[in-house]
Length: 192
Image (cartoon, rainbow, N blue to C red; front, side):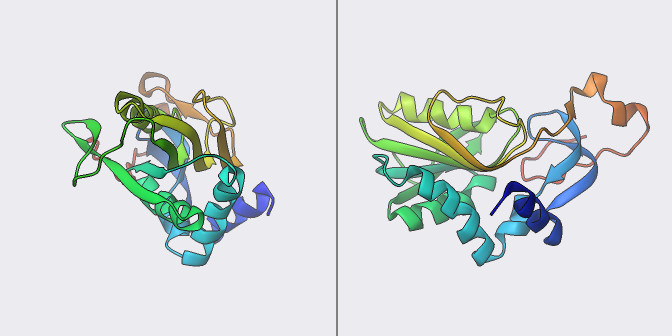
């Protein structure tokens, strides 16, 4: 499936929103990818995750990890397709950490999965968790690359769709200047 067909899938499931949005990164944008809306359909999740699984099928991977909450559905499906263990990191005191008894062993080979990447902040946090455990990052796979390939994690990476989505720092946001109401639709609680 081509990227424009994936974009159509996002529109069809109302997973592509237009307006004035506060992103997890703190930046503002006129479009928002609510991946949960497309991933709520198991067939779409299986299809999108398959692109990631196919890319990494020949890599050495012991475990898949995802940042909560957006990456969990993608990571679990990629783990199912690759028949690997799946864990996730979640926020505690504003930092991602392993909880619920999850752990990563020294030299364990870990694939990181995420739903949407704008600046890559959550993925970089998970990379730090993996490295601090003495484990090895096998790569990074995600559904939407809002940076259109500008974010480079330093490991093999793949996305199912790249788009050069406009985003602004809050002090330079054209949407704020136009008086359009700011909305925070994602999972990370940010008060506006």
